[in-house]
Length: 446
Image 1 (cartoon, rainbow, N blue to C red):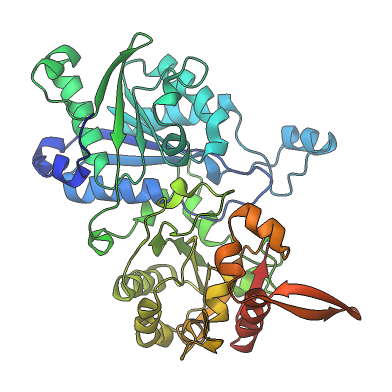
Image 2 (image 1 turned 90 degrees about the horizontal axis):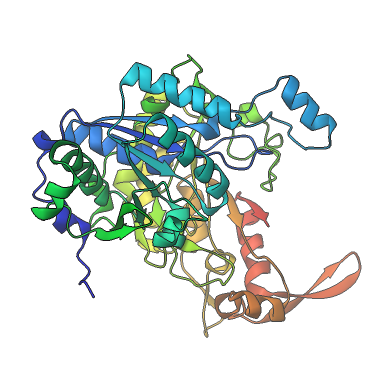
């Protein structure tokens, strides 16, 4: 068995000059067709920003999730019973046309990286066939949630055998090695690159008539050393569609958002807005959740100062009225929230995120005492106005089955009158929601 080496050690000898001029395209896959696209693809944006800014790579993005098309085909699908309030995805043929035009404008890519959650499997499977039709020799790698969950199983003939590689876990460091391997293979040829050991340590051999790579990503050693995702990479597509404007003016949460996050605000109250992730991973182990899409079980944060600098740049550049943090669990580190108060609070930009009700309840386990100050109070002082919670169920039995019982049920149960009848709810849930309301934060429970 090969020893695990952090990708930062693997890429430290790769010089920016060597990768300069390499042509890389990231393709972000479509998500829920019934939902309005409102979250910029931060993963591909971060990777492309790093490659462009630090290595001189010509990195661009094709964001297939940005499109919701209203036309005759959309009308027919709606008439057939599909709920598509915002429009439809591109067809595979339309996606092919976009990719071909992108390559005509920016040049033939040396490396194409797919990005997407496990729900994008069908899209990745079909696009891989299209890529091999129009770009048979390109180095093709899949990363993100789908690749992290399935890893080398994606090479299975019934899955996506057209792939050269998969990149699991966090790709900030290992993307440099992927780009390096793409260039080495192009310039040296695969056989020579293998003979001289230039493709170690991620080459795993040949299966189903194709040489395969499994790139083991990992948490960057310092999230604060990462550049902010350059949103200008989404300014417009090759057909002139204003993707960035679409995202800036699509609220993360509002009355009109048509998603599970119901809030009493209209679109105009919370746009323009930007989205980003301020912490990665989640240290908890809910059984229904695949944490690989946002950092797995390890949990790490960007500092309050790093978040402040990004927000300030978005205020100055885009005039944002709201900031959305798509973290799985924002509030684990109390000190970071404390640090945010004097930095983020004075900006007067409301923001929202996700975290756990037991954290917002602020009850010290086993003491029946509250945190002082409560982290929810600090979040409010820093400008938080929305928290999305995932209580899932108020039933202790169901919570235990889901793996959410340990923290949610730590503080016991309490009776609450609903429409004149008494019901038992976990104390953490009740107190958490009350705390949010007390400090002016909208609590959305799914």
